[in-house]
Length: 328
Length: 255
Ligand SMILES: Cc1cc2nc3c(=O)[nH]c(=O)nc-3n(C[C@H](O)[C@H](O)[C@H](O)COP(=O)(O)OP(=O)(O)OC[C@H]3O[C@@H](n4cnc5c(N)ncnc54)[C@H](O)[C@@H]3O)c2cc1C
Ligand SMILES: Nc1ncnc2c1ncn2[C@@H]1O[C@H](COP(=O)(O)O)[C@@H](O)[C@H]1O
Image (tube, rainbow over the protein chains, first blue to last red):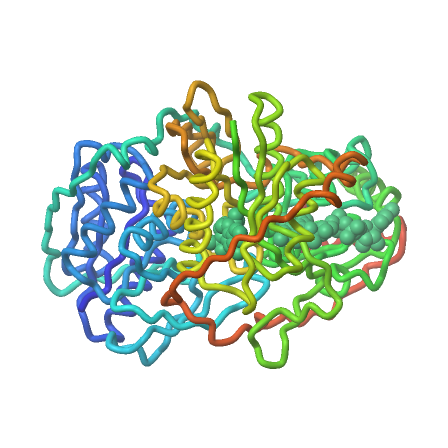
């Protein structure tokens, strides 16, 4: 009866989401009065055993196979499944990321076990022998679901950013257990075949200022004043789905449930009504300024600050005022 | 080239999601219905592939009889056939859903031959389970990759492009294969007049299926705590610009 954390890494580099998972898994193991173990996949991740130990792991299972040189959802899922069969943990926790959901779902399918994705909380009384109650995010986080996992082994992913990473050295050094997993043809196809590296720079997800436009902007060309304001504030331009659906901007600019989650210092939402699927992508912003003609718009009532008025007049006026102060 | 796309009927909430008093469902009294944007894009991608390579697109849903509406919408944008797997209860858990869908796909394939591609959304809009496609693919014995932002086929190989924090990754799957599609892969078309007519005429095939109840059980739905907000109105129209820039200065985003 153990808690097993599955480390997500990219060619041996641990992802930040994994650190939250290591922390959550250790805390749950403590609550259950049981051991906290970790799984790393591929020999290029062996060095992450040290990180796992720093977070309190007592055993680190290192899944090895010559095929495991890069990410492959089926091979990773199969590796998890084989290790789970071998050690029979009570709970397996993965990252609440695209890769994390995918490999936990792959493992669950292979083990024919249920899986609950994007968990926010676990039952405080869980001791390993009863069904596990969790609270998980639905609708991209607009709604929460309390549910129960009724299975001998509980597979879950931890919603990203809900647990603050916290190191805590175990009392004794971690035991390393190398496991040669058996992978065949059936999982060999879905490996990354090629990769074009991302160029570094500010993105929608990381920019401290986002100036965003919705249907109220009216056309692709009418985004120019928003571009200008974003430029003056060293920020980037975002948009709502109404905008991407109209082909005014690329989907990479979309904020929301099926777009990007952002958490800037300030989100300036121009001509956006604030539908729940949009709001869920913007609600982590530290400050929200809505510019809207409708004082009753959902975004206006939920935002910290608002200007009631026509964005086509208000946005250029803000840029002009910034320039006026810069020139002083 | 024949492609099957799985879509799920979900409510289309506006400013907030209300829950029924028993906590089991979204209150749909005043709501329309839709499918996940990812699934809309999966239908569009399938239609584009068929336009290029020939063949036809079938859409499938497991849901109440009303889910015909979503199947017909898919037909209005280019799908040729529609299959409803009727259920009477509200929602099936992911294991049961996947089992039922895989069984129906196998039946359809016994009659008509294999689909070169079976497409899913990356995740459903409502339950966001991230697993029905993967479970179904495994039951069908086919490879699957999720998160597709690009999908092409050539000579029996499906090339999937997907974004990660590190960059753009390329996968190559031998067909028959399954793919989970993400919004942004394309811009879904609007229904044409011809499409609308076809959608009214299409026969929706019903394919009964069952599946054993899985181990994830809903206890109750609830709304996340709302952050209290007393919106500060900085002003009306362009005259508010000065107050806005004061705020930007105060927040330290403008120096
Ligand atoms: C499953 C699902 C997922 C979704 N995912 C997303 C997502 O990721 N992101 C997303 O954005 N949406 C998403 N949506 C769509 C969402 O429900 C809304 O349809 C969309 O966000 C509306 O965009 P909007 O606010 O720009 O348009 P509208 O709702 O039409 O609002 C336009 C606003 O502009 C204001 N306005 C008009 N003219 C002016 C002017 N001159 N000056 C100032 N204000 C003006 C109006 O008062 C109004 O408030 C999703 C929907 C579903 C069902
Ligand atoms: N009831 C259903 N009917 C048809 N397809 C479904 C159903 N539920 C899920 N799917 C498909 O599986 C994908 C993933 O669903 P989920 O595991 O709920 O996130 C969805 O985007 C759909 O393509």
